[in-house]
Image 1 (cartoon, rainbow, N blue to C red):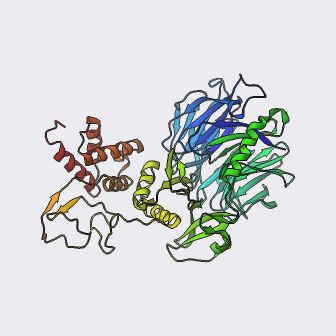
Image 2 (cartoon, rainbow, N blue to C red; image 1 turned 120 degrees about the horizontal axis):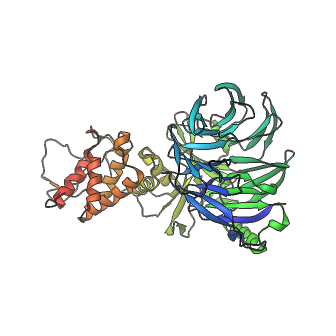
Image 3 (tube, helix red, strand yellow; image 1 turned 180 degrees about the horizontal axis):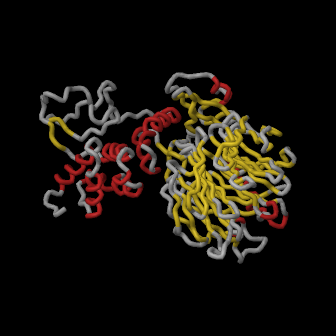
Length: 577
């Protein structure tokens, strides 16, 4: 039976992907925007603690978003240690020499996040993306683009035979490609297909968000269906005598001849990936930021102390079987309720095998917003070293794992949502959805400002940024309460509110031309500039350079930038800048 062998601790967020190189190194990719290369610690013996058995050889940098996929290329005369390939939320594929932190080459072309990678012995790289395409690269150059899926591609695999590939997608299908064309479409899964595994007997396996594993003949028919769970299944890999499958709920299944031999519980909400290691060991990555190795060999198991500690972690994280916070699971509808249409914008909580999922009805479909954790627990919850009344999971993208959001009872959901967007470099379009999700799952509805719903700025729309003003009597009128023209009161210029300013410039940044767009680091820098300005503090030249960049935006988007520049000029009129 399998049990814990080693833990690889170092990432600060979910371990989203993992693999082993031809030279015996382990590579893990994470939502912390890095990948790590691990080597076995030569100073450890069989009695060493689980966390000491592997050590970090190198941290790979270069991505500006989550690292969603990792793979390796075999050793060659030019690269005797092999190459490591990573794909990220930033749409970029990076190529690294093993042991070197910076990429030697970038493969560009995907228009959305890279979701998966697969490599062949002859240097072929397959990349799948949320742009619904598969790209084939040879000698690190684009060979062809495979188009045919109608939803994000979650996995791609090289099938034996020149120019033959498989791809799995959120459109619930698997496609076999031959010579750049769609040869066969495999249908049967009831939800997104997440992972593929090719067998040597002209068959392949697939797992899906529908909780099933399917065994397919390459000629077309489905050979077998194994319904493992009612939860999402994210990954599967072949073992010498069976199959390993991982998914939501912290489960790792070990199958043999189509039957579950063992179900391992891991102290993480999601087990995003599983990969085979030598001697039938299994490597997994979880939402707790830890990669773990499990072994069925007594001599490679972690000390009893480590294994007991993992059991204690499991016991501590388990929620009540009857309720999640103040929600009574028995009163919630099951997944079958998603078969019924809703009204636009309607939200619905679903009990899926003890996990509460939140859905919103949009454009004729129920969209999964995320998972409710024990948000109503009376004790404070810790996130990134801070205590919060609520910590909830927010699923904002099909190309990335859920993000954790912390907030307190006195917080304004809109401000929390905006900070969440800024911290995670998300699209401003998520603001309303995230704010509503916070209110729905915490009960918080503290409004900082009442806004007349009938008022809409003719230039910047309903989500407008409004420059700060004060009336001559020292009162701030409600927006939309009076007409702009003719003015009946004297309006005095004031330093703009930093939070509102950041919110609007972040929103506009998503719409500007690529060459003028502020990068994630620049937006973080800008947040400091706005805060300095609101406090009347002196700015540096680097601050002014960034403000100048923002002023180059199109005239339809530059309004909040001009207001910032006006405020800086008011505060620093004597500055040489």
